Length: 157
Image 1 (cartoon, rainbow, N blue to C red):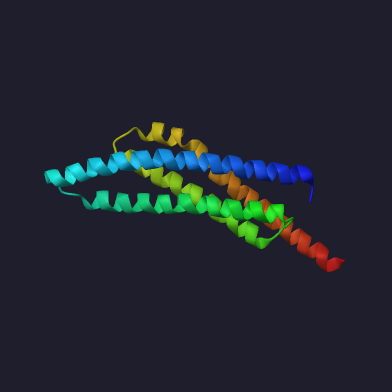
Image 2: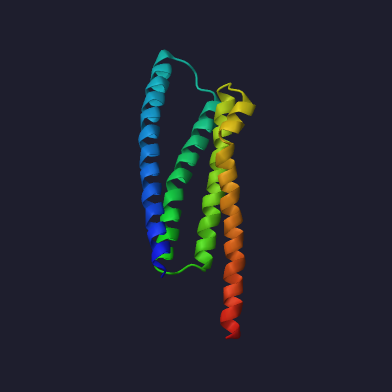
């Protein structure tokens, strides 16, 4: 395998891990704050609405997806370091990452709208997340075409 590609892949994995850990720490702090506020509201006798419960379930689903994204990314990185580029498993992993990012974007916008913030501002702040999801899906389709071409080439040789 090309040494430069291996070095770039390892650096990308390390940077991704650092960003993920930093995001997890900030999320944990926000979760603790929100949990204590919600607990205080529950103790004060406020009634939870069905919308709030559904929104909480969607938020937990987004958290689940946010944990799955690094798993798929590291599997892709591991396969690249093993010189396994053109494989349908990598296409599936990239698609899962792309769709997960898009679902997280939709949930973020729904949460922000529910809290009464401006929808345009909310969507613009998270537009980069939406764009990232589309770019990952685009790369997945390019990789799918590459895998097909490689298989056709392997059959002709």
